[in-house]
Length: 442
Image (tube, rainbow, N blue to C red; front, top):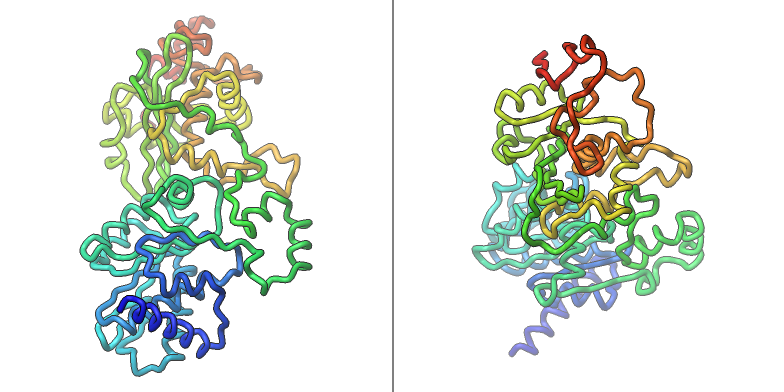
């Protein structure tokens, strides 16, 4: 009986692809008839992965009444592209299956549904009772969105298919592929399994784009990106354990549409910074973030967020302006990475580690001094923190800067001790700009 059912599935899949003018590759048939519960598709560019899962969504919804399929992608444009392919296949099968069609949903007469959504954690929660969840470009889907959509499968223990080309060693897709064990079935489709792409084209893009980019886009390799600002950041991760004794410090990078990011930890007696926590969230008010920030921490924040600093100060946090000089700050973080004075507890700062795998200089500008302004929110928070911890070690002239830039009494002095009160002329020290004495509220 099982053998007959498998044969029917295979014939149905072959017939559907042939009717659409497609000649399936062996791996595509595996996806269409395999009934995998949790499947990772690590496929090169132009391999046909979107075509395969779009056709699968049509076969499932037409063949099994009441099937609900949800397509999720990093952007609405991407999810609608996959949705449009499925819609075109439905049209080719005959419009008599369709009851109602909108830009984001197709309702079938048998009660089935195909819907598409972008990656927005706050709006995606409205869907439930999903039988098949498809995550397109899964390597670029944020972890918080992935965690929000997984419970949608709980009622029916629904199927989950994640398809993507690799995007660095980051995120849930890489973790599932590398460390997911038997929870996942995996299909890898490098370019040598796609005869439609010519060898001449591949040789040309390999010369133009470089070896690392080519391996990631066409060989299914999870590459560390070229030009990383902190290429050895992963070496700072240590097994989780007891938190050392010391003083607590943290850094904050403000954001609303961009993430609000905070990292914090302990500076021990040997001047080693142990990061033990992070908070990372989008589209949330400052009051929400305040609930997730520990109170026993001295915070150094983005100096451009003067209003946010004032509000958090009034709410009871010990918070001061960070140092926004980018190049010296990056040098200070690198120095701690090189001398082992920065440790990250395993599992404590996943977003910080993910950004470190992506934060890079522009590969098209070989001598660029400033990194690309992306994937930098938790790393900026860390930079504000370390810039203040190590202000005496930073190789730059501080002449002419206001004294508010000096660390307050009791802050780390960068040598393992703490700073004393500044000793300039008394009248300058008793300045309205000296936040060691008071904090401006305007």
